[in-house]
Amino acid sequence: MDVMQTVLTRRSVTRLAAPGPDDDTLLELLQVASTAPDHGRLRPWRLVTVRGTARDRLGAALARGTDDPVRAEQARTKPLRAPLLISIVLCPRLPHPKVPEWEQLAATVSMVHTLHLLLHSRGWGAIWRTGNAVDSPAVRECLGLDPGERLLGWLYVGTPDGPAAAPPRAPFDVREKLSMLEPHA
Image 1 (cartoon, helix red, strand yellow):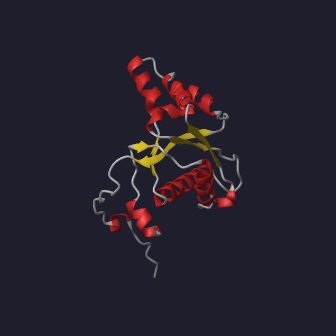
Image 2: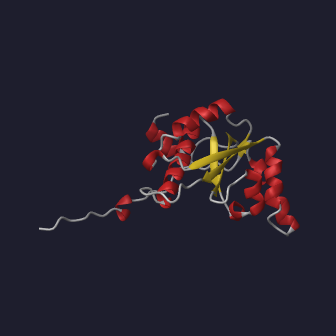
């Protein structure tokens, strides 16, 4: 699949089944994704993969974030929606003399988006999920986050379980978002 086709057909896939990419495939794709724009090559991110029964462990941590038994059970099953969850952790290098935190966040997001495109180009489905649980002390402890790190959510990854064809996107005229700085005379 060429780059234009990959970008045009990538969609968040909500229904994911096994299998997901194996460790070697994931490492290969991460190696490529790590070349995304990153001022200063700080690589201000790290990833925590969650597979197999580790998904139950994460689910238990998610459930500890609520007192409502119904919501707790819903939270407990969320990690079971895909065979692989990739926890996205921002690890800002602060203070930094040249690269502010927002730029380090942008580098992390660029890497994850590149990984999402690469997964799609290889036939995998993925969706980036977030929510209040990213700030849960139980979830932070479960994933081993340090105090200065920030959980940005999870990339749920697996085999698309449903129609493979991407629905067309509604047309959007980008000229609405484009302007030009006029030169002075």
